[in-house]
Amino acid sequence: MIIPILYTFYLSFFDWNLIAPTKEFVGLKNYIEVFTDPVNQKVILNTLIYIIFLVILNFVIPYFISLIVKFFISKMQGTYKVLFFIPSLFSLVVGAMIFTWILNPVSGPLAYILKAIGLTMPNWSNSGILAITVICLITNWKVFGYNFILLLTGLGSIPKNIIDAARIDGIPKWRLVWNVILPMNRGIAIYVLILTIVQGLQYVFTPINVITTGGPYYGSSNVIYQTYLNAFVLYKTGTSSALAITTFLIFLILLFLEIKFVESRDKDYV
Image 1: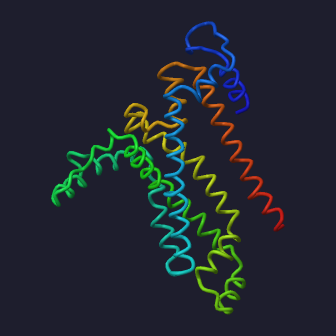
Image 2: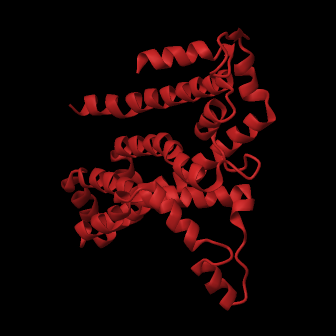
Image 3: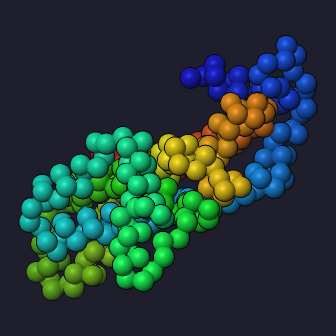
């Protein structure tokens, strides 16, 4: 792991096409292009949109449902775990193909249903924001169950006597959730949040590669796919390496936050 990372860092200071016998040293030019090139700026904006959508679909919604299942339904929790986790067993390629068929604007089943009620299915592959939405839905189909189980397990680790004492005191359920359950489950929640961002950006690579290849006009690309595109399609190794190192540093920051807020909290409990 260490040698490829160091070599990628080394390549980020050169202009090289993977084929030429010599490399041209360009200093910080590749890093400057990461933030000044219009295409890279669009890709970075897309990545931020991806993160917002992924956090809502793969963190906020499963967290909300896990709270309902744990404290408001409390029955058949094992069944919910199985039902939500089943899609995680399938490949993202399979998921991308299924969603592409369902959402086909001409011959897909959803298009026929909308046509029957007088509506038209939009050609989402020609719209950047719609393509991002569909790709995030495919990723959500894959990741939702895993995150749901982690969050539900974290909620189950909260001491029951604390919750029972709050109920005896007549504290409303919404205050119990807000003032007791959420603070006590903070460690698992932060862990799942960081996992959602890091793994989510990696998981969306497959549906992007299978369905949109970053189009239209880089409208659905993100930094992970753009790194691959620059390296192995456009042969812009220096730019690709600079993007990779920048992404790596962002992930390191997220790892630091996970260690600070989760690992240190666990040590305090020990």
